[in-house]
Length: 272
Length: 258
Image (cartoon, rainbow over all chains, first blue to last red; front, side, top):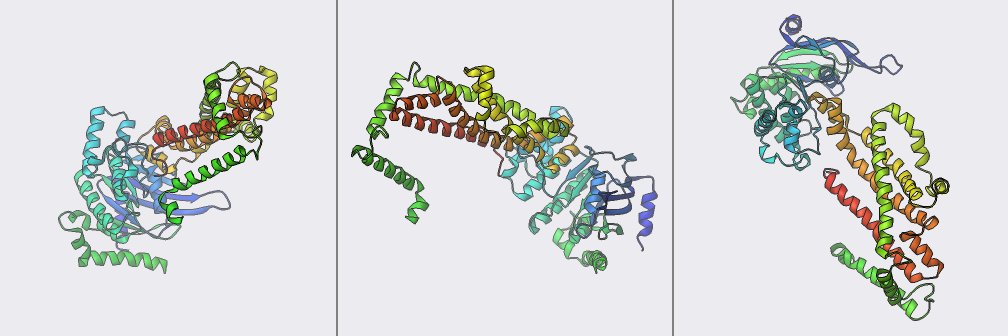
């Protein structure tokens, strides 16, 4: 296990931004149907990291993210952000779901400005943020439309803009591109990288696509089958060079393919 | 026929209506059916014109229509507003649901006319018992619709709002309420159908005005022309009420089904 020391150092280090300590989740705990979803898990990462979690479906990766979002209290252990224990959802942690979960009764602009409006920011600042983020995701011209008038890819871009307009320190993404076609998906991966480089927020990104995880993350966390536990943490170099080189050229490169196969083997080895 | 149906369905509808009117004209003009039972088209027309010009028993036709619509508007309006508010509270709070559910579940399947007798004993035969009756007809339907609307709100949208920093009150106002609006409107359309049918029956049982009373009273004098004109009017008003609500629904809940 060559990467075990890395995990341990980070977990122990004081500058870890996000920290899971022995976090476990059992659905229906205390009943006869108690189903363990997540084995006690330790994971920590630093500010500015782009952490991708991959694993087979039902491996508890979404469960892990939900404890960080504050939607699901862990059965055991604790989750903290910046040293403060998570006790519920909050605007410091933006969330993007697989289904965009937009508000169809609000215009594109009102969706993007939802967070700042609810938090009562000054109107001029609300307007500035809406314009900035809608321009960033290429939806400024659609600001007066409604979400149902947008394509799937545009809806997902709006969901990202809505989360980012709050300028959260942490962005949690649960298979955000899972429902998109391959072409749109790669475009979105590039755009997400561009935003991450510009703003430098910390990202936790859940996916079942190994290709996506290896391309996007500064680190790939591989999880086992249910009840999920972390199999291995692998640093990935491509997030740092993305934007300088074309996405197709990165993904066709020998070093990319080698790392992708390494992760795939881990997942397959687990399954077989 | 197949091709005609695909391209111009309204022509087929028109043909269907024309055929029925023609059969009616032939049956009555030839004397095969007595005009005491069924007036000829011409007699119906002049009977309807007479109602429009002279009104019926002290009230103009407009006054009869207006009185009926006023009863619907007040009973349905208050019943739907209070029912919706109650349903929203029931959807949000299991305690309020447990408190109110037995009465709602008792009232909902109960035919309204069953308790009209009691309302007449309590309130006499004026406007009050009719409006209370319509209020009670609208209330449970809209309460159940609003409650289910609140319960069916997408948990992910609520989570999204929470993680964007919305408070509980803001989530209710900006997520739960608009999300329940679709079901509230479906309930309102169901409810106006029930309210309207109840109104016509109530006017027949206890009343001296309104469009329902008009056809019952005209029937006593075998004025089948007035009765049929009245029935056509009741049908048109019913369609108008439903279409009005449908139009409002499409405007307000414009995102539904998209």
